Length: 207
Ligand code: Z5A
Image (cartoon, rainbow, N blue to C red):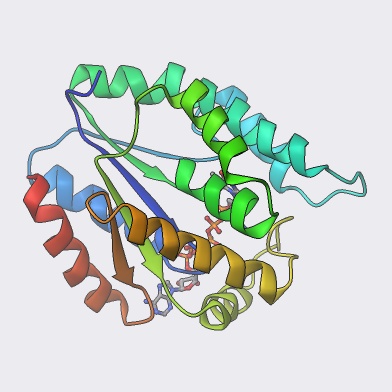
């Protein structure tokens, strides 16, 4: 399946992923790659509908298991319809969040047992994992400040308390420690051009 390369981008709220994903896209295209840019939850018509359920604040409470299973339902569809075919064609896939987000948010943040997440990952991903995961790291308070200053509608996750995001950050950093070859930490607290310098350094070994 893996003729192309698969890059995922992760981090807590306001880390600057959306800001930098176009930069990464343009950088790879400049290097002659065909790049498919996508996101999770989402990326296909059906998965985007699941995204709406997951992110739109609602009076209907959503159980932790439901949230977890919806993330994987969206992901199964995304892999089958978009990611696997793109990689098989030899395209590069650039994905705003992937399975590490589930370990961080549903595992670290919501407290779901990591082994349960691993079982769903084994079932859904088979052996598909990103070649490279760029983890945008910054203090939670700074990320949340950026989100507030951005002045856009707050989604269901962004309504959570600071401690929730601290647990997510810790979980991401732990994953990076456990998977140093795949997950590279980007200091996202610095300026946009400084982050771009880090990104080109981390991407160049793949080219
Ligand atoms: N989720 C989950 O729980 N489990 C899963 O398995 C998956 C996802 C896959 C998706 O939301 C939600 O789903 C997410 C986790 C959960 N939680 N939330 N919320 P999303 O994709 O819509 O949102 P996000 O991924 O959290 O992105 P974000 O909040 O939009 O943050 P961002 O993309 O990293 O940041 P940004 O929009 O690029 O930047 C934020 C602001 O800061 C903006 O005004 C920028 O202009 C500014 N900015 C960016 N970089 C800088 C620098 N370097 N300096 C100063 N200012 C900056």
